[in-house]
Image (cartoon, rainbow, N blue to C red; front, top):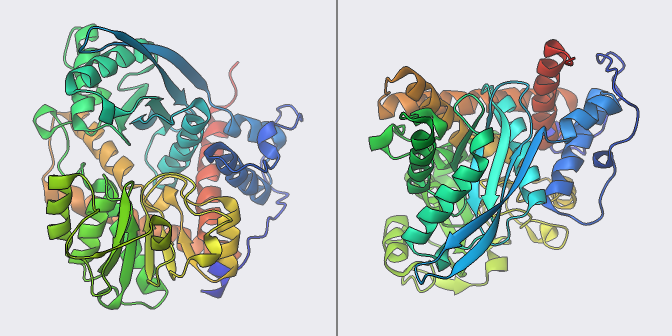
Length: 446
């Protein structure tokens, strides 16, 4: 346990395979003083590169997306007026297979955020030994301000704009913040109409009736729960005697809270974008879910008292699951975190500065590329099923998901313990090593 919580030290390995690329230092190698998802992702990569002893040329290759596309997405509103939105698709790496990553609809979406998310997807796929590279997409739009008909038109137009670079052997989108299985159905149909035949493998996270996989909708939450229970046991806390707080009650957080509760964990605090609630005796997650379905928020739930959203991150609990957006744990609040274990349900919720502070305080942080990888694992299962036109039962999907998640957990745990690394550094180094090996074996063309 002491080794895992020790400060990370970067080694200078001398037996790394040479790389013949340029010695020009890439901007990714420098530390940016302004924390953003992209600077965080680049900082994590730079640390892994130093640990593995790779050259600047290889660093440049791993830090730079292979392909980026920015598109204008015009929308005809229901009122007849027109609006224009910006969309992006970034394909970070293809060394281990076709690109894979979600599609996000949020007003804050920008190219740098998508670049960071695509990079994290590359490491996530490699860490879980899924034969994909990383990608990510987004449209800078607030889906809450639009009708279903408008969202369909935006989705179909965005799909048409990125059509030249996606495909079941090229780049396979999936749901993310602001998108869902209906969005994936529209993408599948738009792509299929353009191809002239039905292509179920173009997306994952589809409705079951269109070739989606059993268990896909809750896969990320299932994976988070498997890892959270294993992490609690690792630090000597029995889940049936543990307490937890979950930040975010959306795609990941809602089901994670439900699965943790079913496993015997007392979930005492939950927040969403509108507010936070607390009950020291434990929240009734089923009743809370009904309340959210009826009102759209956790705010006003009769079985809890309201608290400030920032206060939720500092609750005295055994487990904290940040399952909302990037950068919520940072230099300004990391010292207030009282959880023993932090399991990242969101992508990039912890900045490097917060990582250092919590490691120094003895808090075990399980990184996103391990903790929330359940979604991409079952996306891979869905893609395999689509290619075979053969569908697995829900119990088969769940058993294979659990095996993959716990195998990766043990691998990262062993790697970290043997080298005195944090789990994040160990997970990133393992993933980067696998991608670099694939790159070297394939060689540089021409």
